Length: 336
Image 1 (tube, rainbow, N blue to C red):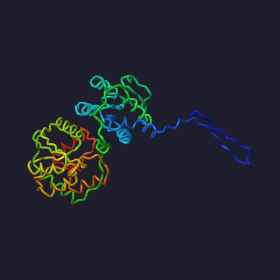
Image 2: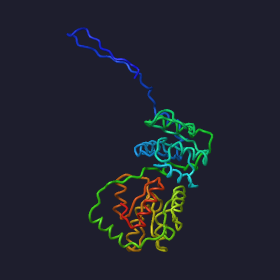
Image 3: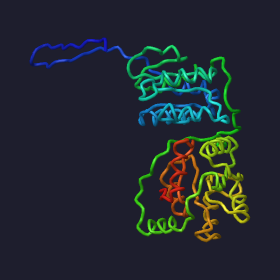
Image 4: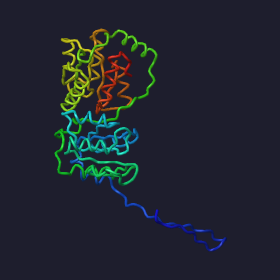
C-alpha cells in the first residue's frame, strides 16, 4: 500500500506504540457524481453482457439505482438478439471481455460493424489492457466499482453519437428493470395438485403461429419489445390492450391461449384482472395467465401466485426468459 509500519517503545515499564502509514485512494462521492448527471442517465437503455451472474446482478443494481434501463444478457448470442430488435435503441453497451464461446472483443467487433453509433464499454478481469481492446470506446478493469462504472457510463453517453428512445415523462412510467430470479418459495401440496389438474385440462400443444396471445400492457416501449420478441419466436397472433378491463372485454369476445398481464395498469391492474378471469371462465376456457412485472419481491410474486396466475415474467423481459416461458406453456409444464 506504499506505506510503512514501525514500533516505538520507552522500555518494558511503559509499553509500546505501533504506528503505520498507508497511501489510500481519494474518497469518491458517488452521490455527487450521480446528482450532476442524473438527467443524462435517466431512462437510458443499457445493454449488459457478462457470463458471470454475480457481475450481471451487480451491474443491474447499479444501473437501476441510477434510473437507467438495463437489458441483461449472459452471452453474445442473446445480446445480438436484442440488438436486432428494431424497437430497442440502445444508448450504450457494457461488455465483459473474458466470456466463453464468443468473447467480449469478438462481440464488440460485430456490434461496431453493424451498430457503429453505439458506445462500447469493456470490462476485463485480466488487466487494464488486453489485445484488441482498442475496439472499445472505454476500457476498465474489474472488480467492478460503482464510481468507475458511473464515470465510464457518463463519458459514453456524452459521446457524439445518437441516443436511444425518447425519455418518458416520469420515472413511474418508465420501463423499470429487474433481474429474473426464482423466489424459491415452497408451494403447498393442494396448490400443486390444482396446478397439475390445470395442466392436464389444457388443450393439446399448438404451433406458435396457431397460438393466440393477449398482451395487456400500457407502456408503448414494453409493447413494442414484447411483440418483436414474440414475433421472433413465431407467435404472430397477438392482440394488445392497455388495461385489465380491456383484457376482460377481449376475453369475452375471443378465445386466447396465453394472457400476458402487466401488473401496474390504469383502470384495472393485472392482479384484479386475473381474479376476474378465474371467476368468469371455466378451467378449459381460460388462457394461461402470466404476470409481467418489474418487481421481483417475494410478496408481489406470492400475490400473483395466490390469485391463481400460472406464472411470472420479470422486466426487463429477456429473449431467453420469454422463450423458456413459452416453451414451458407449449409443453404444459408448471411455470412456478
